Image (cartoon, rainbow, N blue to C red; front, side, top):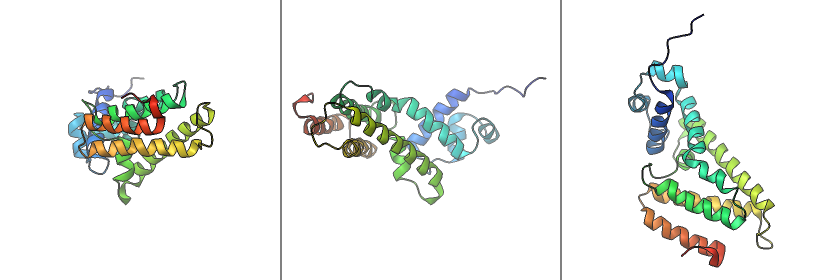
Amino acid sequence: MPGGRPRAFDADAALGRALEVFWRQGFEGTSLTDLTAAMGINRPSLYAAFGNKDELFAKVLDRYLDGPGAYAVAALAAPTAREVIERLVRGAVELTAGDGTPHGCLTVNSVHACGPDAAFARDLALGRRMAGEAALRRRFERAGDLPGGCDPGDLARLVHTLTDGIAVQAASGRSREELDRVAELALLGLLGGQARL
C-alpha cells in the first residue's frame, strides 16, 4: 500500500531553522508565524511533521543539547575535575558568545524568561538542566583531584551558576573578549595557577 505524499521540505533543515528562532527569540517570544516563516512551511506541515509548538520545542531542545550544547557532555569525559571545569567554562563562552549563533543559551533563556503560559517549555528545559547538573555532580564524585572537604554537589552548582552567568551576560550584549576575560578570572579563582592566562 502506498504511503502518504512525501514531504516537500527538508525536515532536518527546518528543525535547524526552528532552533535558531527559539534560541534568538525565546519560547514565548516565538510565534507560530515566526516558525513557519523561518522553516519555509505552512502550519499544517509544521503540525504534521513536528506536532504543536510545545512538541516542536522539545525536538529543538534535544537538537540543541545534542548539537551546539554537546560540549557539556563531552567535557565530562575529561580526565580530571579541573579539566572538566575548564572545558565547561570555556565552552559556555564559545556557545553563548561565539560567532555564528545567537547570543545566550536556549535552556537558560527558557527557564528564566517564561511566564505561566510557557510552563511546558520552562519545565522541560529545567529538567534537562537539572539532569546536566546531576551528571556533573556524579562526575565530581568520581574525581580524585577535588580538594579535601569539597562537596561535589556544591561544586556542580557553582560551575552551573558560573556558566549560567556567562550565558546571561552574553545575551545582555557582553562581547566574546569580555567573557573570555571573565572566564580566565573565574578559572584562576577556581583552579589556581592551572588557568591559562
